[in-house]
View 1 (cartoon, one colour):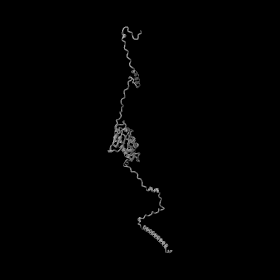
View 2 (cartoon, one colour; view 1 turned 135 degrees about the horizontal axis):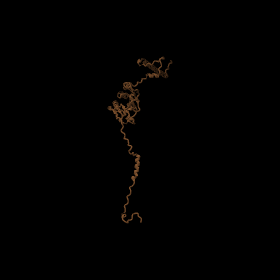
View 3 (cartoon, rainbow, N blue to C red; view 1 turned 90 degrees about the vertical axis):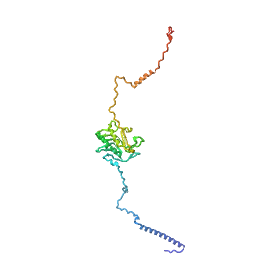
View 4 (cartoon, rainbow, N blue to C red; view 1 turned 180 degrees about the vertical axis):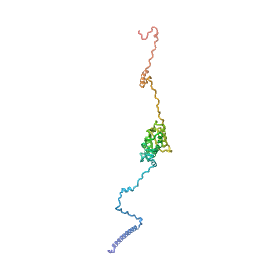
Amino acid sequence: MHAIAPGNGGRQEQSRLISNLRILAAACWTGAILITCANAAPPALRVPLPKPRPAEAPKVEPDKQAEEKAPEKLAPQPSACRLALTEDIAIAPTLPPIIGPGACGGDDIVRLEAVVLPDKSRVPLKPAATLRCTMATAVAEWVRGDVAAIAREAGTSVSELDNFDSFDCRGRNRVAGARMSEHGRANALDVRGVKFANGQFVSFTDRAVARELRAKFIASVCARFTTVLGPGSDWYHEDHVHLDLAERRSGYRICQWDVWDSMPKIAPLSPAVRPEDAPPRETAEDKAKREAAEKPAASEPPAAPAPPKDKRANKKGARKPGAFR
């Protein structure tokens, strides 16, 4: 090492060297302290690095790994109504919820294809009806309990239910701007009649059907449904009967279906046959001709009165009017 000569220049160089040594010493002490603290930290605070993946480990594709970790979507649970409406009661496959347009649609929708009677025979709905499960259950119970009993009393069985309309997104009575119909909520069914196994079709609105038979059907539907509209309710239900389960305040129900009397079997008597010697009837053409002929005669002016006679003509030797002289 070279000796530093005393003097002003030597003193400055010596001061600079001492300052650098102090900075170096401070840096060394700081590093040593950090290493010591890190080694002295408890094991719980240390974050170990992951071990390298073994070469013989199987490769996992990223997409499959994400699918395995993704939670499975749970299928919607069937309602209590859906669980109760089994194939022993009706053939009614589940349909997806109907959403719109507007306020139309609903949940728990089924397609009611047929009602299964207690003897396992089926009564098809033609065509199949799209309904809420609760409405489909009410229709099935009505056919199984009431319609089948009415058919047995008539000495036959029920074989078919005529479906006129079920779900339809529209206003009441198809009037533009009217309130939403229960048909728009899949909560209504329009029926025209039932067919018996003996081939008879019982139309609910046909006055030719026995009044007693129609009265039985009226009593049965009014006891099961909250709304019944048929002939006599309005002009929109003269050829079918509307059934629904609309909910109203205080459980209010509507049953408007008049049982019209049957048409008379014997037509009124026709007028008697006109005798051959009777005078011919005057037609409208003959009457016009007669009135035209009588009109001129009635319109002629009355004849002028005769001039008064000259009293002198009666005297002797009087000259007659107009005589030559």
